[in-house]
Every structure is written in C-alpha cells, then in structure tokens.
Image (cartoon, rainbow, N blue to C red; front, side, top):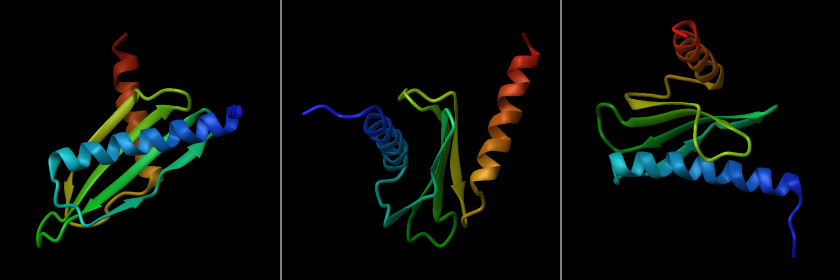
Length: 107
C-alpha cells in the first residue's frame, strides 16, 4: 500500500506536532491537555502548541515552531511557560520573521 504525496505531507505535519508535544512533556510531564493551534500554510507548517498543567501560576507551556513541509527539523523554534494562552498563529509568524531577519542581516 503506497501513500500519496499529500498523505506524506500530512504525516510529516503530525510528526512535527508530536516533536513539539514531546518537548513540552520533557519539560513537564504533568500535562493535563494539549491545545494545538498549528496550521499548514503554503510551503511551511506553523506550529503553536500549549501544554496545560494544573499549576496556579505559569500553567501553560508553549512551543512555537516553523517547519518546512517535508522536514522534521525546524527553521525557527521557541518555547517557554506563561500563565495563559498568550499567543496566536500570527504571533508565531511575526516572531519567526523577526528572529530570522536578525540573523539574515548579520550575513
């Protein structure tokens, strides 16, 4: 049984999301739920995932990442803890552009 190109891209996207979830779990294994706001867009996958804990303070552990559609190595990645869902997909794009432009201007 062979898979189509689009099915392969979907499986790669699922793996990218799993990589970020694993990163959250490595940081804190007491995650009660994941909130996945990730999207596939043109040639890139934009990942935003929250791991929610029952902590009173800093209850959301987030991971932002930009991946090429066919790779499992990100070209941008960031994460931290926060007390709520403080970011959306547009924030991921904006932060990635700022980060990548900073290094591009150093060349």
